[in-house]
Image (cartoon, rainbow, N blue to C red; front, side, top):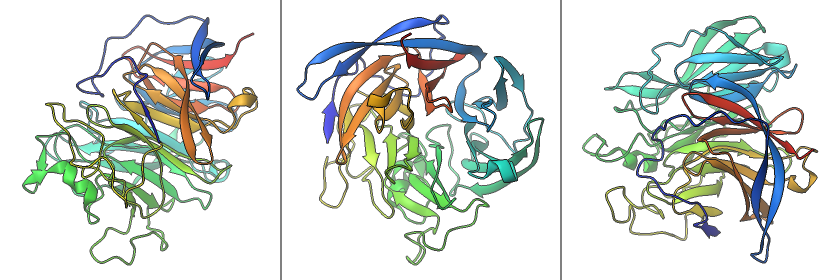
Length: 392
């Protein structure tokens, strides 16, 4: 486990919005790299603003022809093709947009070329009763059609926080979906803090769920035969995961999870495991004091990285491209508060912070493009798609 305080600043609310920074041009970036012996060195990359003018973008996905689909939290889907943005209307039932709620992740079916299925996570309902929902639609390159809600998180909650909402596909064409715990104190459900839902196996809040591509439940899920457990639950004890990635090279599944005031985590997640929240945590309450009485427990997997102060992690991927050969197998995590992308070297399941690539804007999503370069979405009112490439 690595505990780091390399990030410059904490925040009282990791998801709080900010004013948009100036648009960046094609510039050289100086990244701070940390060697195994603790020495630092400077590495230069190019940071290229591919497109601006996105309103609170949340996620991106590549079509087979290298066209990029981008979600905006306000409920729009944009397509970037040949340097131009187009808006494609999508019918989203009962969309709730407020605070952290709205349209969030996007993921193409592994067999998209055959079935044209695109999946979205979004908040449905209103301020009094809402939930994370999964929408599946078809996209033929010209329009979306046949939208269907294939999964809804239960129980309903109030407020506009902690929807989780990252999707990743497993090799068997089942999907994992991260679901948040519902929100911060004083928000309650059934007479107790809603965060307690993360430890309840009959609740989908504070979990990673696993479903088939049509929303049905796989028969080999870990709690299918557990009395009173929701069969969709794959792992539990999570606060608010907004980075989730299944690495097909190693078979490992990585997740970055928001802590409260510090205590953000990078976890190597496994089926059936309890990751502790809110009983075991390095987090502190926003109003002071520890969230949990324990920071470790024998039956709870230790995070591979703990960030204190908070970086507010969002967006995650394992790089397997050929444009940065020395980075192959490294984990890349975005930071909303730290306004950077952190590269984390992994060896024998152990992680170490390696370098910070400064972006200067709230990083919402990090992906490897079909060209082997790294793409970043910034969560701003005038959000950008930024490309990281080797210095020319």
